Structure formats: C-alpha cells, structure tokens
Amino acid sequence: MSSDDFHATDESDDDLPKHGLKGPEPEERPHPEGRRNSQGIRIDPEAEAEHEPRPAVISALVENDPGVLSRVSGLFSRRQFNIESLTVGPTTVDNHSRITLVVEEPEPGIDQIEKQLAKLKPVISVGELDDDAVRTELVLLKVEGDEPDKVHAITEMYDGQTLDAGPKTITVQLTGDEQKIDDAIDAYRQFGIIEIARTGYTALARGDQATVPGEKPGTANEPTRPKNVQR
Image 1 (tube, rainbow, N blue to C red):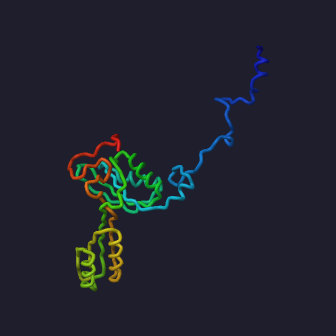
Image 2: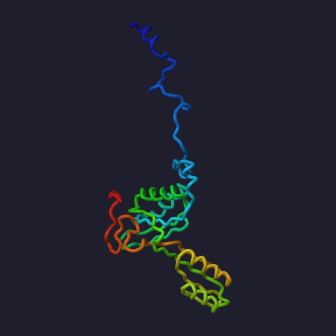
Image 3: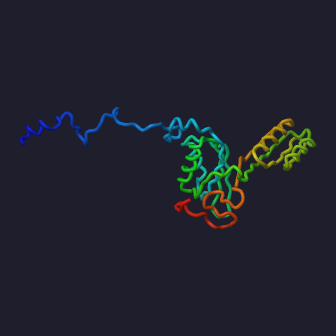
C-alpha cells in the first residue's frame, strides 16, 4: 500500500491531536452527579437536604506535640466547620491529652470531622460519644454583691460554690449539663452579671465503654493501640 493510500483510508492530519490520543471535547465528556459543599466534599443535593444539623460531642486522644491545638483548629478553619466548644486536658497516659469538641453539623459533616481529625499526625484515636455519655461543663460567674444572701441561695439551689465574696462582687462556680448551666445563668441575671467564663463540655463514655476506639478505661500508663490497628 502506498503512502497516499494510507492517508486516504485513515483520519486526516487535522483530526489528530498533536499529543496523546484523540478524545471527546470537554462539553461532550460525562460529568459526575452532585456537587461539592463548602467543605469541598462531593455531595448529593437531595441527600444533603435530608440531614438537619445536630449537636455532636467528639473526643480525640492526641499526643502532646507542639502545635497540636493549632493543627486541630486549622483543620476546622480550612473545612469551615464551626467549633461550639473545645476543652483539653491530660489523660492517664503520660504525654497524651484528651480533646473534647462540641460541633453542630449535618450527619455527613460530623462524619467528615471524625475522618479528617483521624488523619492528623498527633491524633491517636477519635470518636463521637453516645447520647448517654457522662458530660459536664464548668462556669465561673462574677455578679454584683449588693444582695449576698440571695446570691448564696441561688448558688445552693444549683449546687454551686462561692469562690470569692467581697463588698462589691461575688464569684461562684457551677458545674453540670448545658441546661442546668443555662438555667443558673438566667437566675443570676437579676443581680447583674459582671463577667462569665464557661468551659464547654468535657465528657467520658458511660460505664466500661471506651470513650474513643482502642482506649483502655481504668488503666494508667497503658498506651492506646496505634492507628494502623483496625477499629
């Protein structure tokens, strides 16, 4: 077959791409269903509409590496997740801390928070707590001291403790669940609240259930199993 015959039976040079193989034009290519939400996660709009935001308490065991909190907060900032509250403190294992996060997101968002947290290097294990978990928060209230007897009565009613009392101000400490704290704050408003400091939830799983996957409740200095162990 001559070269002329070859060109006559094949595609013209104008139809061939200069590099690689010829393919469909961009507008002719198939596109995946759905779109991405504000966190960059591909979602089905109909499925997303079915999920109302709900509060979730998430516990994470982390290594006490420098900057661990900035990494966690940076993750939430990049993904545009909102942290309702965050507490952190030591555990029974040296060089480990527990971070307790309260968030309010749709179900897919809560799932992504857990998955993205688990990818961070200092995070050992992470999980959402059940609704029956033991959870509490602490609040310090500084109120006007003009009616100390009435302030004391409210403090006793909510099982609080007076930490400081002077001629002008009284500072009290309260602990309990969110509803109890909210009710107590409303009761103190009549005296004039000067300052308030509120921690947000800290929480543990109830009974002998592990608070995060792999944790060994009731033991000290016994490390949580590493990430590569199946949960």
